[in-house]
Amino acid sequence: MQLEKLVAYHKALADPTRIRMLILLSEGELNGQTLAQRLSVTPATITHHAAKLRAASLIRERRDKNTIYFSLDEYFIRTGGAATADTIYRRGADSPGEADPEVLERREKTRASVLKSFFAADGRLKSIPAQLKKKLIVLEHMVARLEPGRRYGEKEVNDFLKEFHDDYATLRREFIMHQYMFREHDVYELNPPELWERWETLK
Amino acid sequence: MQLEKLVAYHKALADPTRIRMLILLSEGELNGQTLAQRLSVTPATITHHAAKLRAASLIRERRDKNTIYFSLDEYFIRTGGAATADTIYRRGADSPGEADPEVLERREKTRASVLKSFFAADGRLKSIPAQLKKKLIVLEHMVARLEPGRRYGEKEVNDFLKEFHDDYATLRREFIMHQYMFREHDVYELNPPELWERWETLK
DNA sequence: GCTCTAATTAGATAAGAATCGAATCGACCG
DNA sequence: CGGTCGATTCGATTCTTATCTAATTAGAGC
Image (cartoon, rainbow over all chains, first blue to last red; front, top):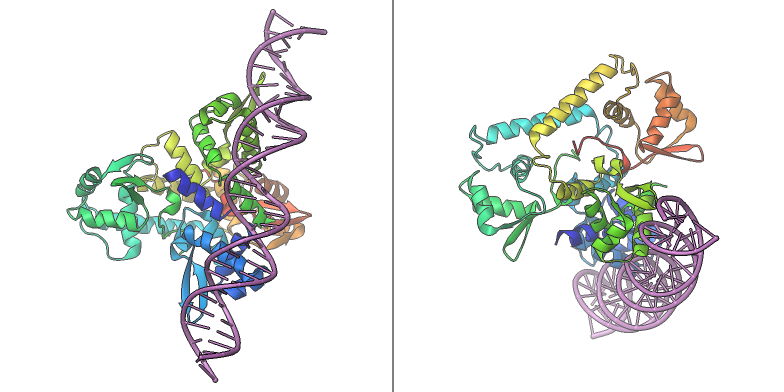
């Protein structure tokens, strides 16, 4: 259910230690011991918090020999929905004038031109973009036609997608993979925008 | 401190009852008794949650005789930073095609034209817009030049604002009032974008 | 002033969550 | 193999928080 996801997400960010952990990680990956030291807690506590952050897909882990390095999840970094990520990210790696209106304007132009080149006049998708950024623009354009909160059967989703492109199976997979929708017992539903992958906010 | 605000904000949204409360309120104002009944909790519980939501500036209250009507805080509804608001709002009052690229494009055009008409070629502000929407665009444009996380003295803030307009005192007050910055012992700091007042996401 | 209704406060309970120390696991290295 | 180091698990402790019931406050209307 959506409610639980939303709550779980906010719970993950509702603890000062975890937020500080994310802030530290925004400057680069760190292992457990280092995190423990920097945050003045024991390694056990780090494990505890890492589990919660992992459950909310906020961090990733990489193992090198005996050491586990934590880093921000790339989705999380890119997610425009969660302004938190933005805040944290900006505080770490200083981005000079990210919210600049010119940047926004340029961004919007890109968006328009991508839509224009991938969609035909009749609204159908000419092809599925290979490049991630472009693909996300295209997916988000389509997902905007779906109703938040409504539950869709598999056939409904397929029919909806067929209007855009014959390869509806690929599109459906992309929707799930990039977190625009989720499936539960063959019922599909939109995710809250917080979970959408957005390339635009950060770079 | 920023950290605490961020945590408090997420804590407020980290409870299913509170989220459901917000969803109910997105359809219109309700009094305590009604909320209690709809959520199957006692009025005392509603009071408890209302206090938390109020502390996070997520709801407002209006008193009519003996009855207190709760409603979503208009800032909250408009806040682009909190995609949550967006989610909740959309689920309640169905807005047809809000994320439509055309809407975004039009929005960006508005923004550009407001900036063009209120800022002179030398970058100074010609006048402070009276209309809320325009004022927010202008404020956000200026605030983008400040560094997140950095602490500014009062004089620093004044000097910064003087570059835009002689009436720096008004500008400073607007910054605080619209939650772009906060002050603590004469030290000013940027708020996380979540708290910024944004008109753009919803209408 | 009395009574009704809505909201709040206070106090109690119970569930949840953060943290620690100690024990354990797992992989590396000499 | 045995030691070491980093991470995890476990159990105990303490703090927080959601919820209730019962008592109290605050108005409104009679």
